[in-house]
Amino acid sequence: MVTPLPDATRKYFDVCAEKLGLVPNVLRAYAFDIGKLNAFTAIYNDLMLADSGVSKLEREMIAVAVSSLNRCWYCQVAHGAAVRELSGDPVLGEALVMNWRVAPLTPKQRAMLEFAEKLTLASSRIEEADRQALRNAGFSDRDIWDIASVTGFFNMTNRIASATAMEPNPEYHGAHR
Image 1 (tube, rainbow, N blue to C red):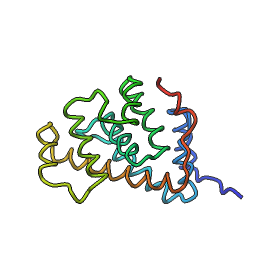
Image 2: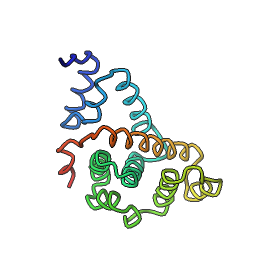
Image 3: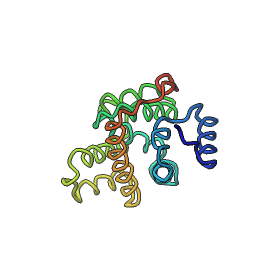
Image 4: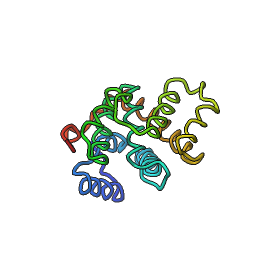
């Protein structure tokens, strides 16, 4: 028997359906435990939507690059669609999924993704020179915190999505092409 969603959660899902045209499967997956869903959405909304010196597009670029390194099917598809939407460039989303190094990036974005890649693949090897490279590219220490937080969040969620065989919503595949 499926437990009905609390009113606040149902309303949140309704807002998602209205704004996005769908309820992301990641939210449906977390709905088995409303406390976990609320924690997930709170941190996601803070990391991905709050004010930051790292643009929303750049945060989505991190999500895609990290998810590509981790081979997370759900996040590559879902956040690839977000990159296409925010950039207006269908090629950028695909390049980031396949190999972010071939994508047409600014030097600042390249530095950001180099840091995210190293943090994903060898976090214990991050050193002051890596942070300084971000500063030299124009990021503040607060921005570095945000880049690291988004990178860490997607490393966690990629593993959960992979562990639970989370499937991307079919609508993401054709979105913003």
